[in-house]
Length: 241
Image (cartoon, rainbow, N blue to C red; front, side):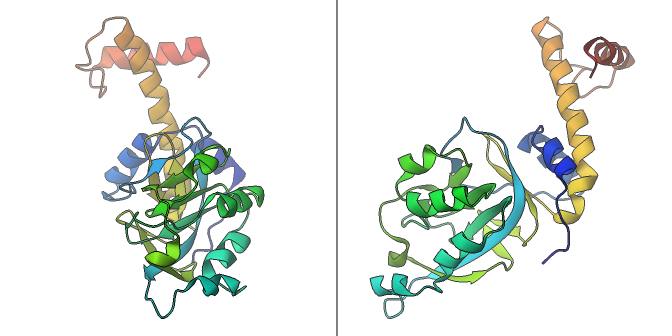
C-alpha cells in the first residue's frame, strides 16, 4: 500500500493525456508491460479515467464454497469492495483474465458510480453490459457475460497487489484509461511523468497539423530537424500553448 495521494493538479493534467503518451514515458524508464491487455471500454464516449487503484482479487470458484447463498453474507468481498472503494479511486478486479463469468453487473457498478468512484476495470466479464455502458463512469472489462461470478470466480482479497490483464497492479497505483485501453502508472512515477506526457501531446498536435499540410514525417516525427524545432516554437507562440 502506497502513501502516495494523487493531487488534483496531477489528476487534471493526466486527464488531458493519452495512454499512448504514458506508455512512451514509462518505456523510457524501462517499464514495458503497463498496458492492461484484453479489456475494452463499454462507454467509449465518456471522459478519460484517472484514479488510484483499489483492488479486488478473485480465485477460481469451488463448488463447496460458492453457492448462491454466499450473497447473504454482508461481508462478501465483492459487495464490500463496492461499498468501500474510496471516492476518486478505480476498482481494479483480478479475475485471472477469465471473461466466461461476470465479476459484477449493472446494479453493483451503478452503486460504485454513485459513490463517486473514478472507474472500474476487470479482466473478467460484466453482465448487464448495456446498463453499465449507459453510465458516465468509465468501465472496462474483458467482455459481456451473463453467468454470475459464482460460477467461476470467488472474490477473496481486497486492496492487495493483483494481476489485471497481465499487469501487476498495486494499491494506490494510478490508472489512466482512454478509448485505447488502460495504463497502470506506478504511484511514485505519476507526478514525474505528467508534464512530460503533456508536452508529448502538445507536440503531437503540432505534428498532426503539419502533416495535414502535406509535410513528410521525416525529421518531424520524431523531431530531428532544427527547422521543425523553430516551427514548433513559433506554433506554440501563435497558439498560446
